[in-house]
Length: 404
Image (tube, rainbow, N blue to C red; front, side):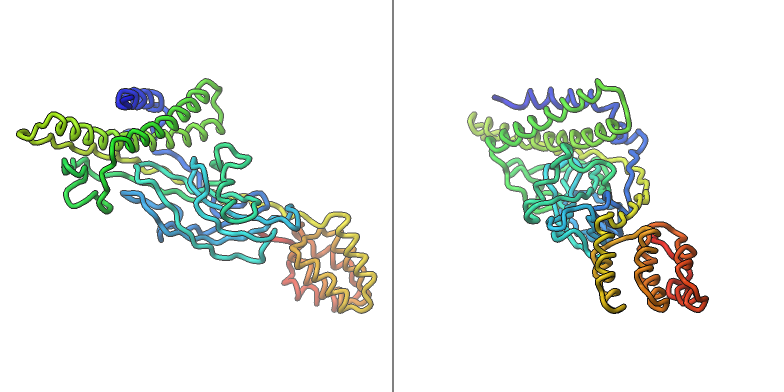
């Protein structure tokens, strides 16, 4: 089956369908608005900040795709996860079927921030590519990469965008003359090494694969277009439009390659040695409008305090400890698990210490981990003597309560 008529029809259908929707892709349209979360908090599972894409920060603008280095700061902290769970943090591109990099694989939390370095493969097709992140629970990093869409059919949503890469395309529509024998520009393909000419069967297979994916994307766009508009569907429509445009660009490139091969085959079969083959010209790569990037500070989740059972177990350990140092060690063991406390829980803990010098030390240990702000006055009611109240103020800097 000749795929060219189907390709032309599918491309024309897509242009008619997504043209009004993807106005942000047009040079005459308003730029697309993309929200980027910095820092990013994933529902009490992990946090990221300081994404640096190829040394350019949250927004990387390039003429062509390729592999680009990236880094960010990461803090895994899945307090609600099973204590024995193996957690991963992965990143990738919106709309893709798998993540591209695994940044962390370990237990439920890690103390403090750590730097993660990775790389991203950006398609060499003009378009806007959103970098997103998510948490998974797999046996290994390799398995976690395949869980990019697990529980989320479209992959991480727009609320997980941490950066953006824009592939602009050619700055000017200057035609490039191809070598009729190799299908490459003289001296190789611009922006990369020589590209071997693909044979007709391979090109037809690639076109068929891309057409199947494009058909599926079109059906999803049509299904959304028949439903009432809302913020979620608008964002999903934008994601599908970006994917469809990328597929269309790749199909146009494949069509140009197939045309060269077909013409070469026809000429050889007809033995037209007296007439030089026609010189094809690559279609200019469309230029992408720079999106409007809006940086939003992610909402910091409020830490979860000890459960009733955890608090009871801690109080029991404090009661059984023989000396104040043993009591402080028992408390410190709980703190090291990432525990947080309410003011009421803190007062119960302090009351288990008999002497006020030790109570002042405990106030210093607990204050940064109390989820309510302004807790110090309530804790000072646990003291009789002013000198120890002042000691508690000095140990806390006169401030008490958790801050993000």
